Image (cartoon, rainbow, N blue to C red):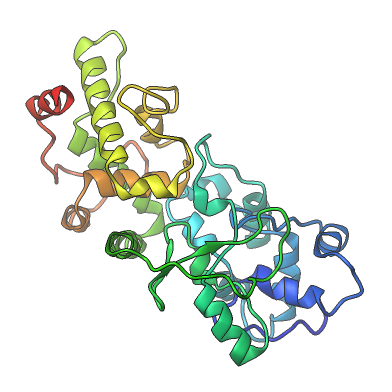
Amino acid sequence: MIYQPPVPLPGEHAASIMYRYFQMTRFTKFETMIKSEYNSKLDSPRRLWQPAFLMLAESFSSKYSLARFIEKYTNITDYSLLLDESVFKDSSVESMLNKLSGFKFHNALNVSQDVSWRYCPMCAREDDEKFGTTYFHVVHQCFYKRVCRKHNVLLEKSDPYHFSLPPLGTESVAASASDMKTEAVLSSWVDALKEIPQEERKIRALNLIHQKICIFSYDRKNPYHVQRVQYVQNRLAKRFNRSHFMAYFEWGALASGLYPLNSVIGLMGFLDPAKNFHPMIYLMLIDLFLKQDELDLSMQYSLASTKAIERVPPVVSPIEIEDLINDNAA
């Protein structure tokens, strides 16, 4: 139990509350307190759940249920947006959280938003003036956000090696019109997905993408299958290189036929329902291939079961092979 934790500030992340609690303790280093007292490590937002968070939640149990604490003070619901809950089947909440603390997505691609805690320099100054301290906001840690929508500036990254509260004095960089458009589009996709029951989100999204690219199975001995997969992978690579998604990943410049699109974790790997990739990869595929009205239209059809192999009735028109050939020739 954490006794007398600081009162959470508006929109504050649990990791930030823990740091302000550390400032009230006898420890000289935050890392020392976190490791020795709570067996935790808060070096990046991707560490979804830590024992320290459960201790903190218990301190606020008279005011918040565990579920409400998670929703209000962490980004777990962002990272579990398209997570197959069968991974945690028959688990208690505490057991599920323990599994999440060690969960690793099936991808070797780096999502840059996971590397560092992020903050808005203008929010930091306002927070310090109003509350006497800076702090990390939950909304700024969403992996699909790069812009502070309050001030329309790009979020800055904190020191990736030592956790501390946002510094003062950092110059803010105005977000471009493209940055703000991307922010709005990705946020609207997340909002649309959250309207779908969690057990159906991944099934519906992957099935719609399969309909769009017209690839439902892959036989390496079938020349048509091999050709179509390669055409679609090449189109994805080209679209990625011309899109706003470059800023969200740290995997170098892509070109047609190069890693990772023709690797063992290429397009077919991304669309394997048995694997759980980083949700940013799914958002990228959804945004590049689908329209929101197509996702909305799929909700008019009920699924007979929640098995990932079940297909949504035809909703979207597939990409014609001639279009893929012309696109690859361009």
